Structure formats: C-alpha cells, structure tokens
Image (cartoon, rainbow, N blue to C red; front, top):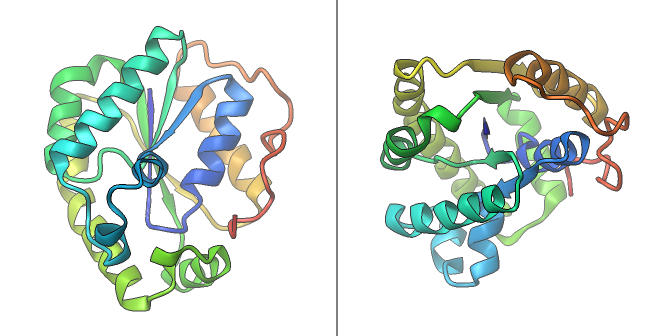
Length: 197
C-alpha cells in the first residue's frame, strides 16, 4: 500500500491513475469516492471535510474490496487527518509500504485548479481553506507514520505529467519490494496528459 499526499491540484489523481496502470494496482481516491456517493456536496463545496467516521468507513470498505480482488493499493488523499491516520496505522501499518508527498508551489496549484474547473475549485477562499486544513493535518500525520518506520518520500511535482510519473515510478521500485512495472508507458495508458483533468 502506497499513500499519496499533496495539496489540491498537486496531481495526486493524475499520478495515482498512471501508477495504477503501470504497476497493475488499484487507485483509491478519497475525493473521488466521496463525490461518487453524491451525499456530501454541500460540505466539500465550502472547503470543509466529510466527517472522519464516514471517510474511514468508506475507504476501509474500498481497501478491503481491492485486497480481496488481489490488488495492491494506491491511496490518494487518505488519510486526510490525524483521526484517519491513527485508524490506518493502528489497523493496517504492516500493509503500508510508503508515503509520497507531491510538492508544488501554490501559485501553480491555483492555475491547475482553475483549469480543472470543478465546483469546489472555483472559489479561492475555498481553495485556501483546503490548503490550510491539509497543512495543519500533514504535520500531525507524518509523525504517526514515522513512528511505524513507514518510509516518507518528498517528490517535486513540477514538470510534465510524464516527468513526475517517472520520478514516482523510481521511488516505488525502490521502496516497494517486488514492485515491477507491467507497462512501459509512464503516461499511464489512456491517462490525460494534463493536470487540468
């Protein structure tokens, strides 16, 4: 299990999808899972987070389903806070092979989010609130991972999608025992080559 962290617009979704194609793993995005439920739009549009117990239940079910189907997992944006992180490390620490943080300057993130054009990306106040919440939480999450000796890697998320994917592939090959690309296409097959998607 690999955890992808990063501010909104950092490319977690694009890269998670690409890596899942390359390694034959299952990409599990907390944001995508929440949107698919159709239940929490008012909360996310304000830049707030869905209650922890709902997120934990939702992602726990998705992780178990993927494992039953024989897939390793790439977690995109989960855990989002210390409560979720505590649950994950207390119940699945032995399955977590590493955490990767995509780092992108905020000015570039604003541009990427404007291109993406989702409802929750259009208000700068909402975006800034999401940035603030992430930054507060990541400072609490990382020590929990470090206590379990889970490798944490910081990756430059600036550059073309292909360049960032290549950096991530090399890290995963190094920290995940037996991780072998099943595809030579670092573009992730049909994945769009734009962070605006």
